[in-house]
Amino acid sequence: MEQLKIKLNEIDRIRLVGGTVRRTAAQVFKMLPEKPDYLINAGMYDMRSGLTVCDTIVDGVLLNGGNYTDKGFAWDDNNLEPEDTAAAKVRGYRYFLGGSPSLLWNGRLNIDGKGFDKYFLNSAKSVRIGMGITDKELVICFPAAAKTLGSFAGMMAAVGCKYAINLDGGGSTRVMQNVGGKLRQLSSNRENRANSTWLAIYLKKRGENPVSKKKVCIDPGHGGTDSGAVGQNGAKEKDVVLQIGLMVKAALERNGIDVVMTREKDIASGKLVIADRCRIANNAGVDYLVSIHANADSDRDDKTGFGTETWAYSTTSTGYPLAKAVQKELIAANGLTDRGVKAKVWDILKGTKAPAILVETAFINNSAEERLLTDIAFQKLTAEAIAKGIVQQIGQKWVPAAAPEIKCNLKIVDKDAGTVEECVIEQENRNGTVWAPVRQVAETLGCQVGYDSADKCVVVYR
Image 1: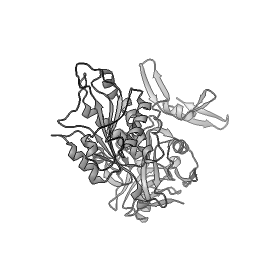
Image 2: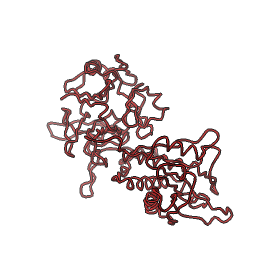
Image 3: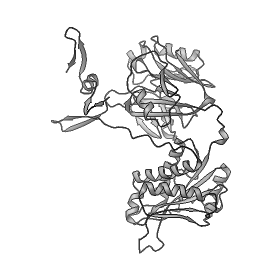
Image 4: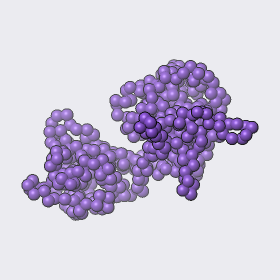
């Protein structure tokens, strides 16, 4: 088998995983809470830093390992689009994968080889891996026979690809399929290298009814000329709740829930009135609305207010159970005073057709809680708690965020120069002893590695 074809309308979503830390396919598969149907090595990496070589965007963050290509694929969930690298950087895509290099563009040969040497561009290499799209299919090619980039591009054109990029080649190529919860290798090479970037492809489940997918409106309060409450140190409610709202959006989408935002940035002029917020939610036909705010004392001279509370239209409203679920998760996560679930006919709750709640995360004009609200870690745990309450109220299993990536597991200290270089290599802890491949350690130190067959030992040249 030398190619994998997947109909675009059968793809639920595609994730780009990593970009900074090298992991094997088995390690990536284990760390993903929801297991993909296919796991594919997505690009070349730098041996010293572990960074992907080409421009890559992962979860909206640009990982610029090098500027080796002008073209690649950009997407948010499953809407794969061929895109110029420069445009992808400014258009706010969730994911972008630059070619190493590009192969086909709009049906024509386009080997964009800047940054690559002539040997790489002209030599034949075994087990190359490429990604392309036809009008109806995503195509992954991984021929066992050695091919130049030109012949590889021809192979991808022959299977109908209009756009295609080279991803990698040689021992790093890994094309894996999830069969009954276990990985089966489709590519022919047998090396098990760790790679920095992986494509995780999720297919739509058989019999899945798209209409049953839930949709939630997230409403970050205030914005524009309406700053909302202002903290003693100048923090504005409109800013902190926007950051929390965007994090809630990411967490819900991770759990397979569609999200509609009333705003995704600050408003350039004027403000977004309550009627407009309700109209956005109602026109989108959402299942729930969650309006996010930061609280403030009415008496600005006595800053005694503290804690978290959640509001519903009434104790008998359809939004009340959601308010209880979200409040429970927030208090468990933030440890602040539980001000409870309350009921009031707020305009945002009254004007929305779907069950709606209003969350007061913490008191922004309490200096201690103001510091929390401007802290990214607190914003993150608040957002995750809100999203978890929503997901559980919907009746789905909560998918938590993946564990943070390791940024460094090897430091090279130059005592004379007084510098420290942080690197990432493969490691394994065996009963308290750290084991690491000699080649990776040596090459990180700038040495070459060979093998003395006569003495049957590894040789490090420095």
